[in-house]
Image (tube, rainbow, N blue to C red; front, side):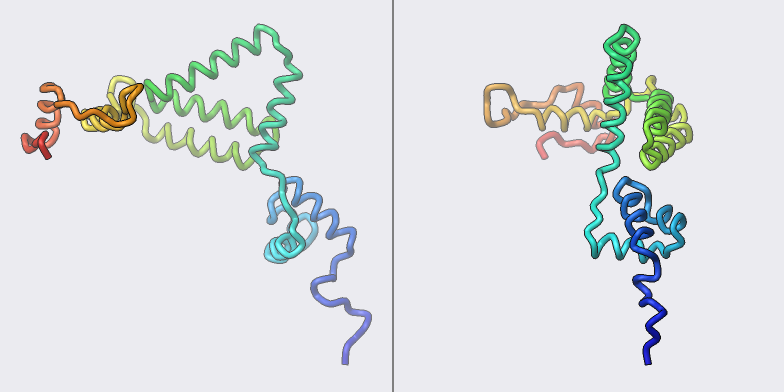
Length: 192
């Protein structure tokens, strides 16, 4: 015997509650936060999102749009140009002269920026990078070359000469062979 006054489990919440939950979820709120806010089970929210095709806006794209809006609000003043140039220099140094301290500073600034524009998950990821960079400390710093001689030879081998479609086999420099021999305790054979 069924009792008509008790709704089935999947409709215990009102349509308005589910619509509000859907709006929050699609706007980027996590399933756990939506579930807690509306008194639902996390699994129920995820299942409903899947069955009803609740498609979220990509959170990094949302953060980028908010960041662009903030940049537009700042205008093209000299301060903004200085900041953009400084950020470009930071990225250049991280690529070509990597250091743990610079990585930590860069990651912390990005965490602050993403937290300011409403990207808590991305901010947390950048904070983890900053923390890990601090743990690495100066074990990997500017004074230490992070690339081995073998890395440099591999990079040269991977590069193809401009204008040609095929790589040209060249004899390795004597200095490179000597460095590799030191690296492999004298057991490096360039003919292999």
